[in-house]
Length: 144
Image 1 (cartoon, rainbow, N blue to C red):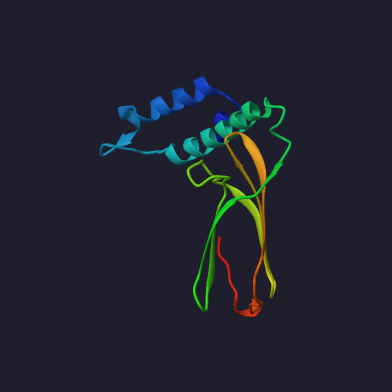
Image 2 (image 1 turned 90 degrees about the vertical axis):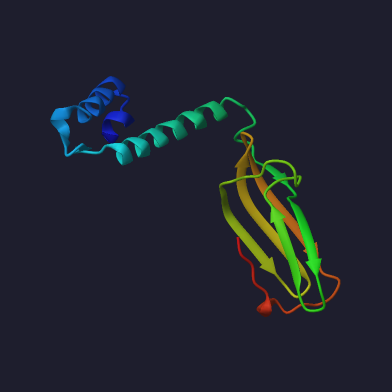
């Protein structure tokens, strides 16, 4: 079924699916063969390719833009917490599929970079912050 969908044999694929619902292909009220997983997987792949083609119509789509992501800073006597949203504003949509996140924490700075896409555009998120005091990078951690 995946091959039929991927090769756009829509009528044949639909016919086979309809036949799988016929009484001859049922046992105790259930289908003998269930094509749900393979059809959903293949149609998602076809849809993703079609969506990429539509996004590619925008001449700026392949020109990745460097942006500073919106972030929040909180700290107390012993901890600094930085929350980064893959967007330029808190109330704006953010990237869902982020690739290649990278964090570098030194005794005097924090830097972050990642690649993402939202609203039909590609972005590189870059954030660089200097600390006012020294920290211990070995005691630092991050998660995405």
